[in-house]
Image (cartoon, rainbow, N blue to C red; front, side, top):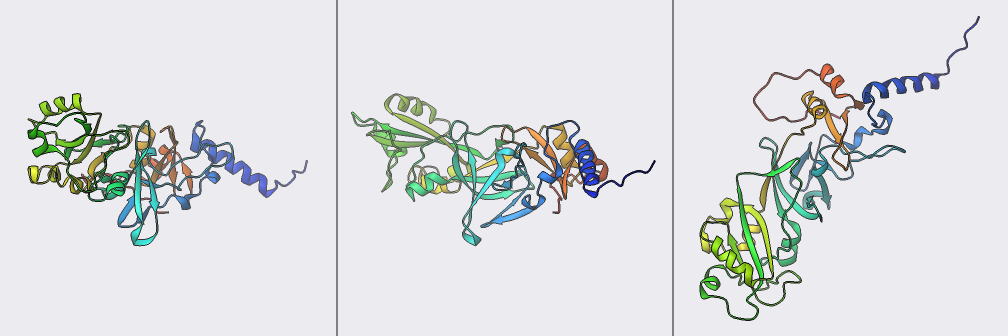
Length: 308
């Protein structure tokens, strides 16, 4: 009995089905033709900042019908590049109940550290910025470093009587053009570091002030000159930003993908691991590791060598 020739498009569909099965291992991941590897750049420059995995550009996501959109890195490390050329600004959003914009000043990939500053505060006040919110973020991938120092702001204080002279002389914000955040009411404002000896004063202020905001800064900048910097030059300290570190994903499949040095971990908006993205399409974490064995340990931090 003669066999009819198999149409070429049927062979392609069969190959695609097998590829998807091997890549997904039963997981609901998008097929390789749903992944456009041109959007997951190995690196790109936004202004003066070099952006690489596990950070990724905000528009580096793709979605195919009936599949979940994915990122080219860790969900919380999405960079919005505002503007073009040398004047472009890299923005990372942080927050839990509400997202806020933070300007990326620098990224140190060897140390897994990133320097950020509050974009909204510096825009709003110039040399006399107004901080209106605490810094919050999910600790799954991000955390503070040992460089942490905190500035505690009190707004709307002593609106009905004069504050003690000791507070006015040392901690009151007296910056020309300063405006407290909306809703703080009348009164004066103060700023403290977390140095020992300030705690009792902060407890005292909590009773006489309407609003309290705590923000991180770099310790070396906040304490370098004591009262000569605070409260008069608190804006300079805020402008220098603060430091966070990122941690490697705890997801085992992602670890295998990264150790292959040929894969990027894709996550969805719920921070769920989706797949290992390799040059030319999606590959399984185990396949990537088998195809690209882990190189001898050099004692250095992991960096991805993906070339797309």
